Image (cartoon, rainbow, N blue to C red):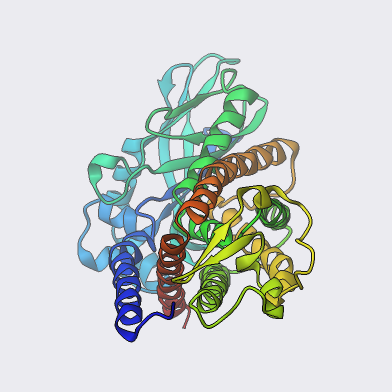
Length: 432
């Protein structure tokens, strides 16, 4: 049966309203995570009167807001102006940081001295780089302890802040993630298992609470009709982003976040657009103007293994979702041919985004490599979890309610695409 004009308009309106609502709620709310990472390099030294040196990188505007400075401080634009404000408010900044970041030896706090302050760029964001020296008292052979409570939730400017520490103290070298629930590392106690566990959780949290990567994964799932599709695109995405993530995090590849972030948003929009085109094309063929006997039926992924339902839905055979080979007689579509190359290309870019969020660009070392690998495993664990939950639900929905599935997935594709375009424009504006 052919839909009348009123019905088509009604459905398109519902799709548009759903998409607009998601953009209005999700766009501004999740385009920027309201959280931040602090980066610390802590190293022991044999210099007279100095036992430990540390460099702390804190997001500039959050530091100035958290230190309760005037708007002229946190609103300063440009490196020269920000360096000048750091110098002007040095005492306030120093008081804020030393009250929340501590180096101790033999159970006693070391005396901190601010050696200098600068402004550096991390992933296109201005960070205040503070150099500290610590004088420690105590008997030789004791342990150091590093504690961070920077940017606590109660300050309300940021939530779930973490301090990523690389340290070389008391003959130990390693990495640590300090959080509100685990704010301290102590040499001799911060074992490898604890270090790797913290990076696993960091990777899992990054994907789970990283809306751009989650939307990209959901867009890939919307376009997948069979388990074969899911396995291929998930594997391609995993391999691609793992390669660039490791290379970038180890400092072997450097790409500005001003380039990476808009491209990540564009990748979501492209895949969502491909989803929408496939759903729309399949629905038109199921609207009564097309017969399953037509030669072109086999050329469309949307009808592979299923039957067309009046009203624009495509019924999916549950058994077909488990088939690895393509159904006989179905020709390869343009998206079939380009799906994997596109996913690989965008996966490479997403890997750069993961590395930028981690913020580690130190030289190669075994302790760092293990941390990076476990961070990546945390990402993959959450990715597999999302696939394991979402794909079966999509299959059941397509098989039990094909018409509702088509309109729901169209609404989702439109919403994902619009949010991605919003992010792309928003991320291009500062770069322009």
